[in-house]
Image (cartoon, rainbow, N blue to C red):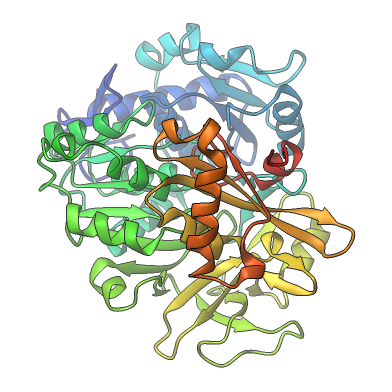
Length: 503
């Protein structure tokens, strides 16, 4: 059929459900038409192959339709975090060179006046997307790419442009290849649990769609609602982050036992370290369906590990996939032997590199040669090629000349029954250079307040049994929540700026 997207399910079962955000549904026929009509709307706004379109929208079916429209038009798509401040949004729009912002009415006011043209899927453009003229897809034309911006916790965020590329048909075929390799076969629904402006939830959804799976979209995370969706819709695969594991495990046992999760086949997780006891509990509950990965905005997914492999090597993030090589080096760049921690380096497959948009110096500083780079993670590779992460270079605390890794201390805290969430960070110190501090969310809020000192001493004693005393935080703060992104990543800079010493 002329003018349809080359996706399994579009032709095979046009009336089956393709997208559902629990407010609106799209069949594969609807999806195909919406994507091609949105292409026509963007073209009418002067968007052409090679241009850039920004996407500022909450989770909804139109989000994924917009990404596919940009891909088919040969346009760079820039997903934007709607939590950003006005200045940050203006910066990304200007830096990316976006000609158009596709948004919903909730986010429309976040677009600065005098900026790019605005296309709201809730306004006149939305009506055209549903009823207007459609544009044909040219499968042989160059495909558009997604340009994610880095988190920016250590400075201005940078757009990451991936090297390589092929035709529209090639891009969809690559999505299907990646989906199959990661256990997503299109045999059942995929559930989106996180914000689609983050790389992992978005790419997971795109791969599922390319594999022919219906994609269900949660508009916000809720632990029990997740369980209900899995049971009701017989969800086959999904993506979670470790903080979601913790919140699921905090549900009362009678609530957890109320739901049938037997449909789950693959649960991908990553973005942050997961305490070993937490993962053991999740595998015991969900079954051996967890599939952990190590990835970044820059290079995609580097390693992956099944539940069975992880149980034989607790703590690993797996062995390299997608043609990557991984090895650890010392401060001089010399490769280290198996089991010895150092800066992890990656060698990308030919044509699989990246560059920072508009920042040749940062790109050059990241690569040691044309294909070998580091994203700042510290870890080691064992004798069988399994990768273990220790921390990030940017987050290492150097106190009295000794390297201290926050992730190690956080994992010990998270394993304590009194702790629901924890973050370790540094503060400058005239004598030691840096000192170690912790912010803790208690599992039982009633323990906070007048009991803080008692809980603090309990945690100090527990840590002293597990780690060297110089790693034990000098102060503890008890807070209601931590400054995490929707992907579960910590903003340590925010913790440092908001630090208040213990009484």
